[in-house]
Amino acid sequence: MLQVDKKEDVLQSLEDAIMETNNTNRTAELQRYSPSVLIPKDTTTFFRYEGSQTTPPCTEGKIWIILAEPKHVKEEELEFLRQHVTAEGKHEGHTFRETQPLNGRIVFFNR
Image (cartoon, rainbow, N blue to C red):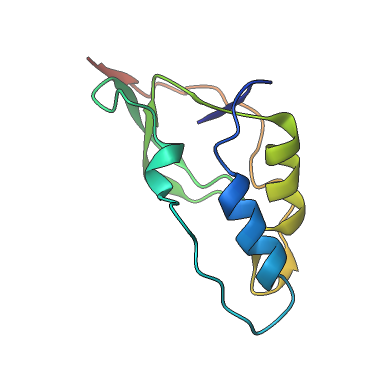
């Protein structure tokens, strides 16, 4: 999970590559970038529950694993991703929905 923080700048090289290739057929090589920068150091503490997709038709039976420690990114980085990351060339916008009632579900916590 990403959380806004004014100090972090973990996505700059990814932003650079997106800008270089966005809306083109070009490729870009990411220098010194690893997706692991988006994963917190502690990957052993997490929540797990059976839920549903976040977009219609909100199909049930999906297993969600949420790391307890958030990863911090700047507000500008998060907004950049919202504006430039696409699926099949279309802007996806927000792909989440409001928190739903548990409806008897059990949320497991692993430490």
